[in-house]
Image 1: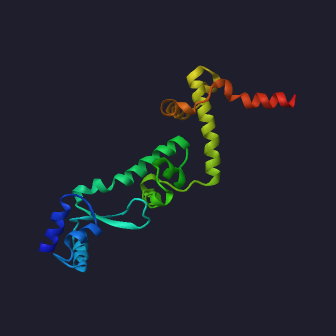
Image 2: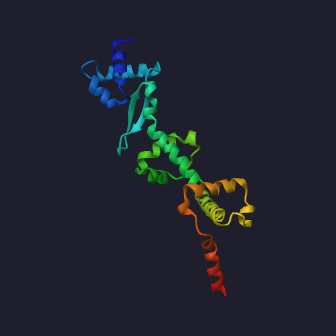
Length: 200
């Protein structure tokens, strides 16, 4: 191992750093920027360090972060947050969320997380939902929330007995995690009753 590699590894022992920070700490006192980049490339090829592209705050520019393999989890925090948010919203919306919905849930501008959303797609199966998927999920969500209302207020009703185990489990999820979304049974057929009275 060269002296240059030892210097880089010793600095990264304290945790992940962006390329700019490494340049500030190492160049030109110990080596030139060109030599540093060559050293980083060699260490990465030898799998002694890893390089992960990340966004810094609201900056749209991607920045290379370097870390020892044992510190990999420290660079995965943002990506895991996006993955978990996609999974959470998919269960809540009964479809894959849009980039805008993911960004809103996380409190970031869409342009700051779009790269991570697409990067995590192989893991989450995510794709931008089509207007048809959004419309169908909205219909299905309304139905599941109505089922949840019956599970809560009248669990022995025919409305519940006719449903599949999968639908009932889905409704139970909303009862447990999103009780504020569950309507009252008396409100479920109210629009229909109003429409009937108007026709008469």
